[in-house]
Length: 293
Image 1 (tube, rainbow, N blue to C red):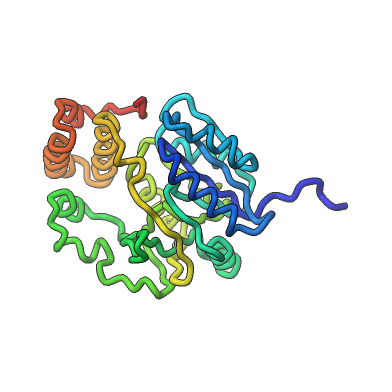
Image 2 (spheres, rainbow, N blue to C red):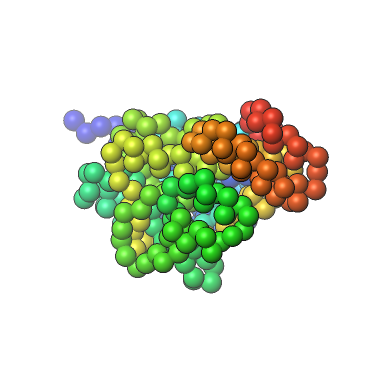
């Protein structure tokens, strides 16, 4: 007997916060490039004030829309989308991307052909066609110190500075801007740790995927366009505080007091410079509990 409903092969989860123009482009590119029946699309709107949710509802009625009544953060919103998904593969996709023809199929086909691969990413292009440095090694404390002191010449190994974008290869930590993961892997590892509301949730996720014995691959023959920082550029001081707490939380989990002594002052100075607000002093309390901005 033929089942009444066949689950989609891929579930595409997009989290959005005040990115209406970009989001409309993203959904439009999916509509024109993804074959019918291949994927379901779930958009989780984090209480946008720019009409994003209304645009999705009116222009893309086939998209499943979740309207949050507050900004729940990137991690929790993606977890919400995952809870509603049915696909064998889960594609986490940025709301400021443009899908290219054949990319989703190539990613799914790679996972089909390589059972040991837990996740796969692709090439991210700037709007001018140049590649973005979208893959990293797992960061050490010294990498964080160099990064947040803007000593980028010391981070060549961490940032894969000599990366060959044309070659398909095993990588440690690609960005979650376009990351396809097996549902069976997420069932084992979980998706995002919601303590990392905005940043470093993808780093933590990739570590858990690899700790579970699964590889993560970058595909040199698949690509998308990524505008970048569409949401974070709008961040209020309270959201930037939460971002910096996420960074510190990740390194404290790995390095304990060393991270508090060495990294926390660096992050504090950067946060103070960016926000020009006394809110920077709250970094040391580490008592964040979500985004309400």
